Image (cartoon, rainbow, N blue to C red):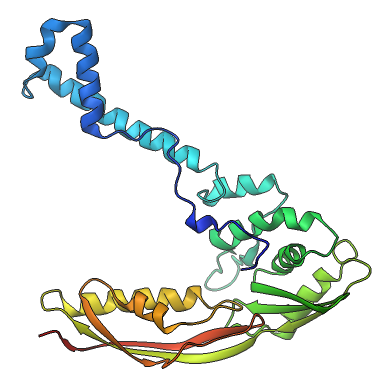
Length: 300
């Protein structure tokens, strides 16, 4: 999202806190330990049909499961991997709470459920929390407090071409990303709070400029796989790509679209739209209005 957040949590490999040994490895170690204690059992344990061998197999299987459970539980204490309630508890160390996107209304017909901020956005705000501890007007501080203004804020860009003048661009979670007046007012009020904005800064808040585009692609498939399964996989992948890149300053590249569309079973891709890379500035975002992926033929 910006230069000050150097660590991309999505790219961190999952650490192995406890050695996740294979079932066969654990079983061999257990057998070796038992034979070391009682050598006469070696010919017995060489037979898988022996009841004692079955007991040790059950033991080894349970140990394998426990190792995996302990490893998963340990990862739940790390920001990159925590989800749900575990992420909520981690956030308390930074004084950050999950935002309410939609208030519950049990008296409505039908009842309206409460909708909370999703883990990905909440994790991003928790990671930015240390930036919000300064009132020196850092870019990270403005991004943190801008996201905290409303769960409808999808992305924030901070620019300052003139000392003391800060230009904030807001991308909304709703519609094509254009922030409406109430959302801009909420962000402005948050960022102009005396506890957030340095006295010498003038903060101006604006909506992002949206570049709309459509995606149209025809696939050439290999013979064999079910064509609809392959087509749907390609459509799902490219849809995820355009959603992920509906961000400020994120270009939509032809190579990126081709990579997403080239799922297993796809021999070639003919991309009709967009015909070229869509380049956007830091205060702009590209929004896909429709995705059409069809099967154009088969490789012969």
